[in-house]
Amino acid sequence: MNRFMVLLLSLMVTSVFVHANSEHTLGTQADSMKSSGKTYHQSSSMIRKMHPEFMNHKRDKTLRQGVRTEEYSLKGCVSCHASKKDQSNDYHAIDASEQFCSTCHQKVAISVDCFGCHRTTPAEGDK
Amino acid sequence: MDSKINRRDFIKATTATTAGVAALGAGITLTTYVNANENPVTNEKRWGMLVDTNRLTESDIDGMVTACQKENGWGNETHSTGDQKASWIKKIKVKDTATQRISNLALMCQHCEEPPCVDVCPTNASMKREDGIVLVDKHRCIGCRYCMMACPYDARSFVHEDITNQKEHMPRGKGTVESCTMCVHKVDKGGQPACVEAVNSDAVIFGDLLDVTSNIHQTLKRVQSTQIRADLNLNTAVRYSGI
Image (spheres, rainbow over the protein chains, first blue to last red):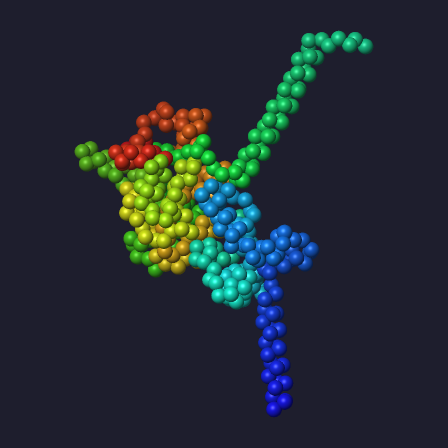
């Protein structure tokens, strides 16, 4: 019985680590930025908590008033946080399972509506 | 050494200073222009277009449609049937029944000053920017299509299917209405709409209708032009000459 418990516990622990491992990527460009010691967001807790408000505010300013700055633009999020596929120059869709947006959004069970309309990968060439 | 400044030297010095100040002035104007995207658009401008149907050939119009599709990424919907397909700009033939004269014209959103689509929208998704460009705010659009019924120019389309691989600057999605944006993403950066760029001649002119020095203002002052369905008093920003 004890042996069985040990096996069960070790399996559980492993699965936690596997799960934690799959969440580490910030996206290709964001990862390289982080490893070179640069920061883009002033505070990561702030952006984690407030990004819906920041983006809601920004989208109205952009669409209705023509303010096209980079700060809090969805285009900017995607260009840094999308991950490249292994051995390829293509990107994973940012809202795909296990990718940057969905790792948190799946956990809290909130759907990401942005990508019903917005492009899910950085555009090649036409920037 | 003679400390008196003679007339020639004085003029030289003054000219140099004036030139310097003028250059600085130009620099300041340039900076304002670059930063323009940080400031909301204002009603000091009103963007408009003039289409000369006498000079616009059928192939020109096809080129305009293709350029629009390429720029904004519409036209490759696979599951939509004929009427359901997006058409932001289309080629229209008009025939004078009395004289049998046929003219071809490119018809797109006319960017009315008094847009009926904005009047009927229940969610304020259909909106007009301060500079006169009429847009759909797809964040608010519920897909009721009242605006499509209200538009006298049949300028709007409804997206009937899931769209992927959109252009980065032009989000498009199922269940929302869309139409010509006058390439607002380019205009905001000082550019011109894709359809205007596609025409080699100046059969289509784009510019600020309120700017008295602009080509479009000068041309409209000189040549005869008309609004389509002028009887509706919508004061369109897209005008046509030769029909």
